Image (cartoon, rainbow over all chains, first blue to last red):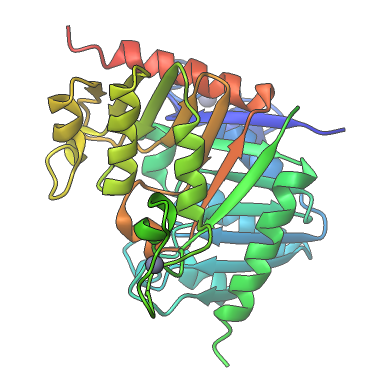
Length: 172
Length: 172
Ligand SMILES: [Zn+2]
Ligand SMILES: [Zn+2]
């Protein structure tokens, strides 16, 4: 059952939390948020499907919908590992500090070059990858793309790249 | 004949022009350049395989090996179209001016957000896509990835995105 799914950004609207999360739905008249699926809600659904592992290799992460979902997976018992760029760790809005505070393992490069990947591996089975940085601007502003696939020919090299960088960036 | 190929950067060395381009090969003793294929030489080979069209949707392009190859395709009669980000057009080293001077059609966004895609479509048949910006730093410095595929399920949405943006960024 090989699948490929391509998502494009920007989303025109952010998804309505009332509509998607409460049993009564959204009761606001003229609600400005999206009541149908967006690229971000699709992306979040893939992330929430993780049962065992989430390996995240992202240049930057500031989008709280994404970081909240990653932390929720960790709290649910999913083994989360994060690789990121050292120069992005301390920028305004970075969620790397929140990851570490939550007990998530984080490793970072120590070079002046960029750890510029922006991919996620769900249960070593599904890859999310593209131009998309994990920021709010990428969701609602930029032209961005994400490919989601479980094709083994595509997923396997990214697993190997993740393991290679995880060892390379071991601080010990 | 569906294929997927994944390339990772950085390359440890830039390919040796003497070795790859001259019939006698490289005669320099202790040559510092690569005498075997690199991720960049693989990428260039895919680009050079274009026979009819090259649609390029790239945030930034400064790498002269890549821009020289694009211009050579245009001069060989391949129909080249380029979409780029307006804020990157005038940066130091940008090859967009060279593209326009060569007669290549270029369109750019006019927003304060980023046209952050970095993909190429070869003959509307093969997609090159990933984190990789078309810069020398991405080749020899950063951790970057590129997926090359001709899977129709993946390629088709990118064709549609290119056509959508090409119309959206029509300056007339
Ligand atoms: Zn609502
Ligand atoms: Zn040489």
